[in-house]
Amino acid sequence: MLYNKLVLFSLYMSNNRHNFNLEFSLPDEDIYLDSATLGRLPTSSIRLIQEFYETTKGGTIRGTHRLAIEASKVLEEKRNAISKVFKVAPNQLSFLPSREVAVLNSLFYLDKTGKSEILTSVLDDHSILAPLIKFSEIYDMEIDFLSLKDEENLMDKLNERISPETKAVVLSALTLGIGVKRDWKNISKICKDREVPFILDISHSVGHESYDFTKHSPDIILSSGSSGALGPPGVALQILAKDIDKAFEPFLVGGGSIVSLNTNSFKLLSGSNKYEPGQLNLAAIVGLENSLTELNNIGFEKIKSYEIKLRDLIADGLKSSSKIKLIERNGLEYGPILSFMSEEIDAHDIAIILEDLGKIFVRSGALCSHLFMDEIGKDSLVQVSTHIYNNEEDIRKFNELLNSIMEEI
Image (cartoon, rainbow, N blue to C red; front, side):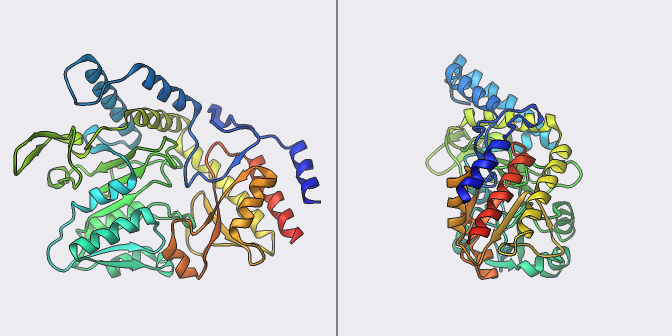
């Protein structure tokens, strides 16, 4: 019966993969709703990555031959283009292999003397919290975790919890587990007033909305390049506020970031390059720049409005079933990430059935958010996350198939 319903759905539903005149590497029959894990690349970015490997074979800042000079030129061209998206100076932007590396690198900037603590939240995910825990072990720092309840009055709680021992506030702009959206501008203001460094992760919100760091800027901004930004894996961003560059000595050093070295010391390059150890994944940077430029050309406000509509459609569909519980709290703002559960059927089973019967790809499990799971007393959830390659027909098909699954239980 359920299979027959699916066949009928597929007869009258088709998936237009050309939203905003941008093509993606996604078969028409697939519905990909797991952008929070890994975004799909525009086909134009894939072509440019291939062209890079076919035409550019040099390493950046490694020699005076033509290929090395051309590679270094490409790097700076892409740095300049991406910096314009965020309205920062090129020397504020650096590239690192992953956001986990970027988090660890940024923590090394912090004052580690005396009694110390770092303020973060149980809503943040492993890529933020695991480096914090490791860092706290090495430097004997405490970690103060905001709760889900604290998020409802986040600004008041931050003012209340920041103390003379607080060495940094580390939060994401959009949480991975249930997609809570934070007012990062007001957080920046509070941290500036209290003279506490603010490290902001924008991995899951970049590409979905605009960022302008000219008026309000955290001390350090970091982001994966492969989630909301729709770039390939293997590259992350680090943006430093203008006034901290001279005081920020990176934890990770080596390779092209070194000017000179003797038996007991070394000298780093100046500007952005001093934070870029090893051989950069320049092809990934080429793809990331193209994806961000394409999104910027579409217009982030247009993207934001579009995804609010998709989220509302998903939420309405989930709330229409008495056997599904959407995980959210009143008083919080949400972005294009939703998580839900059912008491009747396991989260992994729901994900498997959606893929088997409808070629609908969602995430299931602890969602790299074990502290949040502990807080709500659950082992696993189903997560749906959208991007501009999704459309209303995708959401209708998802809602109808999910409701059919629930009716068959």
